[in-house]
Amino acid sequence: MYVSKESFDAQDLFEYVPKDIFASLRNPALALPRRVLTFLTVAIPFSIFWFFLSHDRLPSSLSTAPAMPTTKSHWHGWANIENMIIFGDSYTSTDFDPKKEQPSHSNPLGNPPLPKADSIHQKWLHYLTMTYNSSAIQTYNMAKHGATMDGFVRFYHEHYLPYYGISNHTGAAGWNSTNSLFATFYGINDVRRCTDQPRTKGDCSEIYTSLFAIYGFLLEQLYMTGARNFLILNIPPLNRMPFSRKWGHPVPSRAVSEWNTRLASLAADLTLKHPDATVFQFDTHALFSEVIDDPISYPETKMYKNTKDNCEEYKESGKKNDYKEVCEVKLGEYLWHDALHPTTAIHEAMAVQIAQMLETEHRRADENMKED
Ligand SMILES: *[C@@H]1O[C@H](CO)[C@@H](O)[C@H](O)[C@H]1NC(C)=O
Ligand SMILES: *[C@@H]1O[C@H](CO)[C@@H](O)[C@H](O)[C@H]1NC(C)=O
Ligand SMILES: *[C@@H]1O[C@H](CO)[C@@H](O)[C@H](O)[C@H]1NC(C)=O
Image 1 (tube, rainbow, N blue to C red):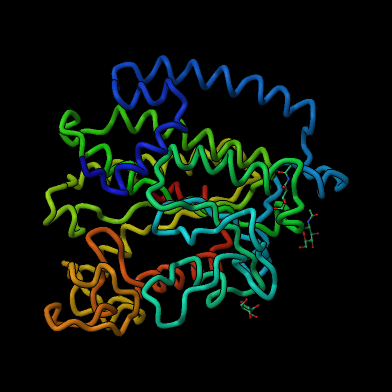
Image 2: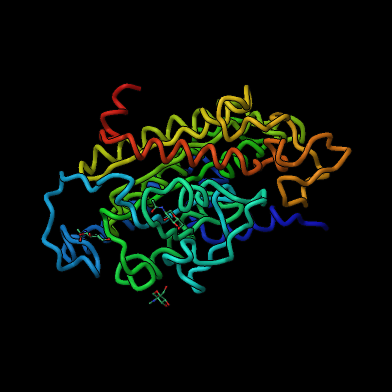
């Protein structure tokens, strides 16, 4: 039987989901009690351990710094960010390998080599690191293609913790709470996976409860390793993507909006729990919706001539100016590279808007949230 690469990856990742959460994904009715149980068995010993070991301190390179009052903001502006540590899926992945060349001033993303300027694969974090930066930034990318919340678990444990987390700052020698921004961009594959299961009939509430317990737990763990500045991205309108509209995987818009609503309250919870954390929420959904409706909304996307469909013949193409007659317009003039992934222009628009938000937003994110 032919197994697509994508479903193979998903299977593969399932191995990293704690067994009870795996069970809860299969049987949402079991989700809550099991989830709470695991949460307690993992979280409580860890917190006690952490409290005694390093209460009010930061790991390794910072452990000699005087303890800061916990209400002090560690956000000193976009121009003071020197490191970004990023978690996400294919919208974010650059196939960074923590065992290979590390980010440096001359090579801000480390490995692999950067995409060329005419590549359709430049992503928001390339632009944010190297074009819309206000300082020299080194970006450590933990994102992986196809990642779901179980991918967050996996790459937190396999890439972040051993290489850049507690007790190992050798990889990212200079990162500390004030000069670093932690970004998370998950949900696209979780929502797809959930809404693709006929059994859920598009109602993902129970599954989201489990997934957001994991999301919250991992944000909390990042906080414990010293993360104080967070950038949390919500998900674009999957229901308006070609794979949902055309290719037999309809995603109800409410499954998307519920994800984003829960994410907004998760972000709000983080600042309530930790007054010294600064949380920026980026509204990917709004930006994509505007561009789909009218590409002229942003200067970076004004060349788009087709924001609704993808051209299958471009799936293997990699350059903005690639042209196939059957597709009618150039690859770079499509918003959608394939049924699920956008071309580079909207990534640049994301970076511009994110940088603008980080540049101008000095108020604490928890103040913003009260307006919603
Ligand atoms: C932004 O990043 C690029 C590439 O690393 C670097 O050459 C440039 O100096 C940076 N800009 C600022 C304002 O530091
Ligand atoms: C710490 O990070 C460095 C560089 O990323 C890596 O070579 C080393 O193996 C890591 N140490 C441990 C204990 O994982
Ligand atoms: C964090 O690192 C920056 C240099 O990158 C340094 O100026 C700052 O004092 C450090 N912060 C703390 C709390 O050590």
